[in-house]
Length: 192
Image 1 (tube, rainbow, N blue to C red):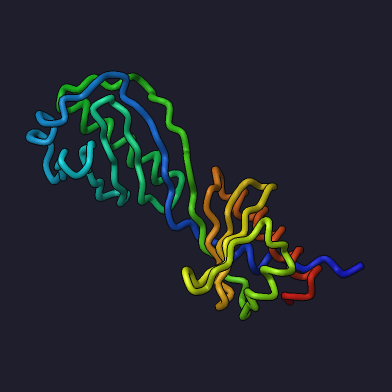
Image 2 (image 1 turned 90 degrees about the horizontal axis):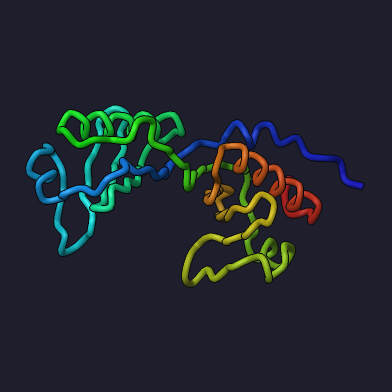
């Protein structure tokens, strides 16, 4: 049996690139009126049904919909997405829009980049991992798409050794996915 690879250095390379979370303020919003009251927003209902509001600190974008639902994206940490939503709630409150006290915030997706530190043979990996769990069409996209069952995430692998893991609900999902990738590729003698 092969020795279990040390994954710590690969885990250290993981970096959150984007966090998407959703929430709601508990009432419908007149987006036309809000667009006039709120500075620095983009609102073009012909192209997008929501109002686009950017926060500076932390840097993120809140998509505000007529239903009162808000989707926040662009933060590079879970704390950042919470802070951006809290800032958005405070701004809306200051404009006399009643926001439910402590609205629920749900992390929908975390995108994490990583680096396995060596060149990968994606053709061999596609065959080794099994074509039923892999999409690899280099003419269409330069990366290999690998759908993991546990954790339930999607990993993109690139020939450079770089990875992107999406579908995470917490950073631990990306850590576990990286461990699974390193172990499976090592078992197949395609890595390490």
